[in-house]
Length: 195
Image (cartoon, rainbow, N blue to C red; front, top):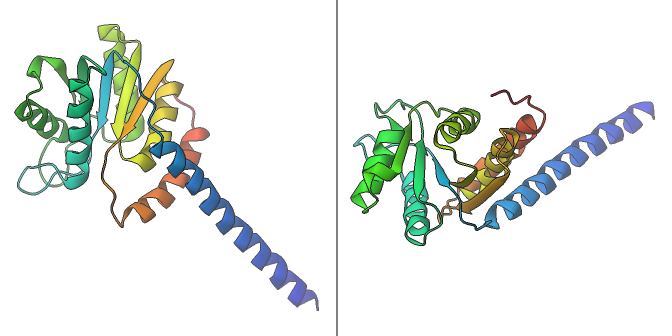
């Protein structure tokens, strides 16, 4: 009898945990799909994979295309492209800049952050760039499931005005990415942010 109660208790804990993860993930997804428009001093475009031929992956291109759209609409006058040096052998920030320039964005409006290997690093580097250029507000562009964590870390680094837009690309692997982001968001929520 005790064993059965113990089993039911463990099953209850397991199901409660799964429900909490699914509900939390759903809340973050909905929040990420709700763009927060506004006129910012600078955009932050977060990096993603570069293909073996040196072209942006579909996810990265979607982020860059959204950035071009917003830039042309006057949402921001300057852009920070943030990414690291991937295993494919390319600096994501350089690939991003080159793509934006090819779409008609003036090279002089683009600032490179080649050390943005994580969301945290990108936000920290953006804070330093903002201090140098006297930027007060930022508009982050990334995948919808990545928006809440990106906004959180930027706010933690002292940005009072954080706008956001999600790339218009939806893939089957977003399910896994969204679930992973739930745990990423929690870890950032309790992380000590030091500039």
